[in-house]
Image 1: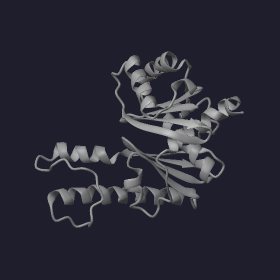
Image 2 (image 1 turned 120 degrees about the vertical axis):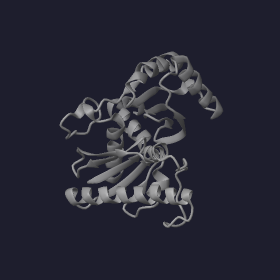
Image 3 (image 1 turned 60 degrees about the vertical axis):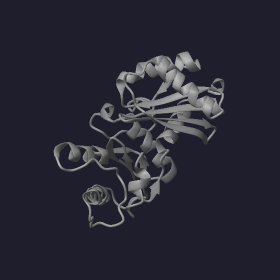
Length: 259
């Protein structure tokens, strides 16, 4: 079995693959202050809850955009799973040309998403990842990572509105039944939801103008299903795209594991 870990600024997602099958996955809050032992015990408890044997893990692959946690997770993998983890490095081991002026500046999660998207949908395609930031990543028809767009995530926008407008309440992100809200909460939810869909669609149309007809637009991330269902421009919703990309990249670097 292969354990994959995607470390984001807000959430850390873990998955266990048996061959090509994702047999378990979990989403945790990213805590920079957690120790090696805290992460190790948490992971082992998740395995126990899901009735999985940690001793059957043969390898660990990690994509991280939180450098302070990298050593913690490295030591956790060694101590609690007896493996040195494989870290995705966009400039070294992803098997996809990076057409970025500074390839090392691209987040590992963005390249992992791009690899999985091209593998399953071909190109040109775009991945929209609804995370702390919302990222739009462009992949050419030749399987090259071209670059993309970074915007504040919808939760950041909601929190900024709450903090800067004294009379406006904090609200949950939801799909309101109508655009014209007849309450303050309904009006804010409408502005956040439909306004964000407008942002997403506007960027996607401009990307398509530059790239040509797109083979697919894939939404992923924690809010992919909620936002993705609101736009006909999004053709696929795959909340586990990053985990599958980690599996693919690990396999390309270690084909002997599943030979």
